[in-house]
Amino acid sequence: MLLERDQTSLIRYNECVNSLDETKLIEQVALGNEPAFLALYDRYASRVHGLTLRILNNDMLAEEATQDTFLKLWSRARQYLAEQGPFLPWLLTIARRVALDRLRLEARRPTLSDWNDPDSVWQTIPDLETLSDESRWRSMYFAVQGLHPDQRTVIDLAYYQGLSQSEIAETLGWPLGTVKTRLRTAMEKLREVWNET
Amino acid sequence: MLQDEHALFRENIPAYAISALDMQDVATFEAHLKTCITCQGELAEYRSVTSGLLQAIPPKAPSPELRRKLISHLPARQSPTRNLLMDFFSRFSLRQLATTALLVILVLSNLYSSLQLRALKQQQAILAEKLRSEQVVIAMLAHPGTQTLTVNADVQKLAGSMLVDKTQNTAVLFLWYLPVLEPSQTYQAWLIDANGKRISGGLFTAITNQEYTAITIQSPVPIENFVGVGVTIEPQGGSEKPTGPRVLIVNL
View 1 (spheres, rainbow over the protein chains, first blue to last red):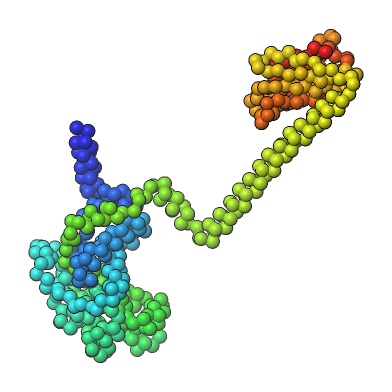
View 2: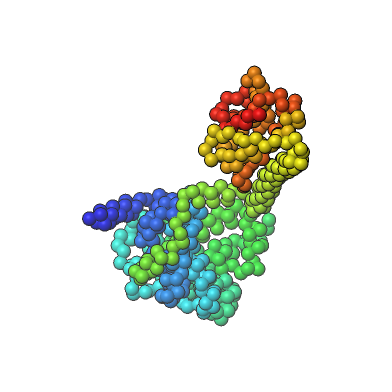
């Protein structure tokens, strides 16, 4: 009986924590509140894992990088300052660094992305015309997809594989000037899309 | 600044924003960036593009096992107190903290040495007093006029005797099983004359690490001028006349 009551209280507490807004959740995580931490995990684990998997292209390594990212969140939550920007890009920046560090550690050769992943749930999200943050990210996804394949490859190797322009030129066997031009052109196109949405 | 030079740096903004600028070009670009408001504004726009790129990846749920693993890997819960302490200490540099720690160690070490010195001095005073009593006892025992008088105790188990040469100014009390008093109290010896007047014969405490206590009583005049010696319990520092309960009396 007592156990049931405790479980009910715990469920109610967790429901209460889950309904807290993001800033409050992070404040709670900074104070060592485990349910708040798990609420953030439940909210963003798939975003973090999507990114780490995109960079590492290996399920096991990606899960390890996702875990490391959330452990860093647990220990560094107090470093997040809401006035300096939204939480998700901050968390994903950590995830990108963790995954790129892991990629260098494994000395893995860069793999080209498959932006047309058929399993992606991304394209199934409706309402592309809204101006919400979600729709802006979707627009960015489609903008990258809409790039010329050579430009997309350069963006991919630079941002998701952590290669410099010279390293990209060496990897692809292209002249450095070509890489620079393709990267600059691709970024200009993405910037236009980003500013329009 | 030359327009051509600015244009060259401007071309590097997208690569810098996406972290693809070669290392050898980063320092010169950043030096230019510090002085160029136009480039700073353009970089901010490209940085928002990279933020969009971060979020443009399709979500992919990790295995449910990861959540369980993560919970088991969480380091010990941080307490709010610890956070407050961490926040407090993070305001100071390592050098400041090290200097403060060194000062605290020096002060504590000094304090500890002072306390040790004080304890040693107290011990030395007790030993000196004991030695003096024992020397007096030996001298008195060797003296032909010395008498041994019985102590009449008012405290249970307490027993003893007094060595006295009535023509001298000194007597020695030997007391067995004298109770140890609270720190706020002391034993005080009294010399009692024929009129019942009492003068102080000195203060003393029970010696804790042995069963008997030897006390030397000093009188301003020969002991034969008194009819008795008494001991009472008084407040620390002693009293002008007896105020506390009597512990013993010796009839001279």
